[in-house]
Amino acid sequence: MGYIIKNIKALVQTESEFITFRAGEAMKNLPFIENAFLVVVGDKIFDYGGMSEFSIKKYASVKEKLEVIDATGKMVFPSFCDSHTHIVYAGSREKEYVDKIKGLSYEEIAKRGGGILNSAKRLHEATEDELFEDAMLRLQEMASYGTGAVEIKSGYGLNMEDELKMLRVIRRLKESSPLTIKSNFLGAHAVPMEYRGNQSGYVDLIINEMIPLIAAENLADFVDVFCDKGFFTVEETERILMQGIKYGLKPKIHANELDYSGGIQVGVKYGALSVDHLEYTGDEEIEALLHSETMPTILPGAAFFLRLPLAPARKMINAGLPIAMASDFNPGSSPSGNMQLVLSMACIVFRLLPEEAVNAVTLNSAYAMGVQDELGTITRGKIANFFITKPIPSIEYMPYSYGDNKVEQIFLNGEKIAF
Ligand code: NIG
Ligand code: FE
Image 1 (cartoon, rainbow, N blue to C red):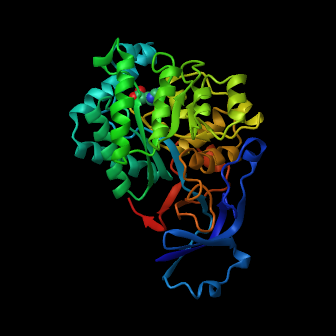
Image 2 (cartoon, rainbow, N blue to C red; image 1 turned 135 degrees about the horizontal axis):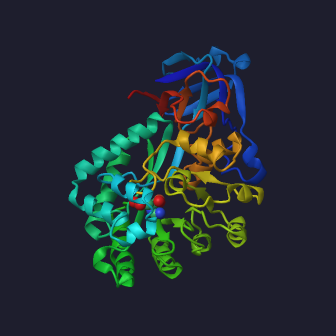
Image 3 (cartoon, helix red, strand yellow; image 1 turned 120 degrees about the vertical axis):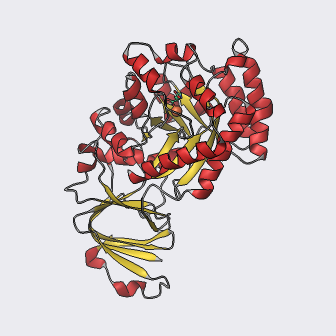
C-alpha cells in the first residue's frame, strides 16, 4: 500500500540529505515546500516536491496501489520525536502535586519517601500486563498529538526484579506499538529505601548485577543516571556509565536539573548521546558541550510543572549549540506527553523562534534518541512517520495556537493510524 498526498499547503522540514542535527544559527533553518506533494510507498518516504513538478507517470513502476489524499489547506510535518519519557508507571501522583502547591519542594517530597519512591512502590504492586496496557494508552494519546518516536526509561523498579519488569514491558511496547521506541535503563533514578545509608551498595548492585543481566537479555539501548544534588554523584555516575558502555549501552543522562551537578561534564566525557534537563547550565557547561557530540535536551514540561529556573536555551543556541526538546512524560514532574505543548512552550517560555522549536522536537530530538537516520525530517528513504494537520494558516500557527490538537491524520510506518 502507498499514498500520494497532494495539494499540501506546506510540507515542513524537507531535507534531501541525511543530516545529524541543526545547531546555533542553523536552528533557524526550517526548509519547507509550499503547495507540495508527498509519496509514500510501503513504510518509507518515496518522493516529495512542489505540485508544479508532480507527474503520476513518475510512479507507474510502483507496484503498490497508491491512494490519493487531497490535503488542500493542510500542512504535513514529520512526527515529533520524544527523546525522554518515563511512561511505564503505575498510578498518578496528584497528592504530591497539591503538596507542591502548598509549598513543599521536589527534594523535600523525595526525602519523605514520596516522589520516585512512591512510584516505585506502586510499580512493584502492578502486574506486567497492567503496566503494559497503561503505557500503551499513553503511547496512543501521545501519537494522537503527533509523536512518532519515543524513548522510554526504566527507573521506577529500583531492584532487579522490578527493573526487569519495566524493561520487559518496554520490549513488549516496542514489539506491539507502531511508534519507534528506544529503551533506557535508569536503575540510578533514586536510592531505594532498603539502601538508605548505603548508596554505594545500590550503585554496586546496578554495576555488578543489573547491567550485565539487562545487557544479556538485550533489554536496553541506553543507560541513564540521575546525576544531581541529592541523587547520584559524578563519581557514581562515572562508574555506572563505564559499566554501561562496556556492555554496549550508550549513555543518556539526567543532568543539572537541581544544581550545577557536574552532570553535563560527565555526560560529555563519556560520549552521552544527550544530557537532559539543564536548568543549571553556565559558561563551563556550554563550553564542554561545544566540544562534544552530546545533544543538550531541555524538558519544558518538567520546568513548567516544578516551576524550576529556566535552562538558558537562547544563550546556548547563540553560543552555537543545538537544542532538543522532549516531554519528560512521568507521573511526578511532567504528567503530559503532548509534544505540541512542548513546541509552544519552546517558543513562549524559552523564546525560541518557531523554526528553532520545530527543529528541537523533530530532527534534534531524533538525534537525541539515535534515530536521526530514520526519522526527524521529510527525506526520501526515511520511515514515513508524519502527520497531516487540520487546516491551519501558517507554520507559526502550530506553536502559537497552544493547548488544542492541530493534528488531523497520523501516518506511522507509512500506514494511516486510526484511534
Ligand atoms: O525526569 N528528574 C528525575 N526524574 C524524573 C522525575 C520522575 C518522578 O518524579 O517520578 C524527571 O523529571
Ligand atoms: Fe526524566
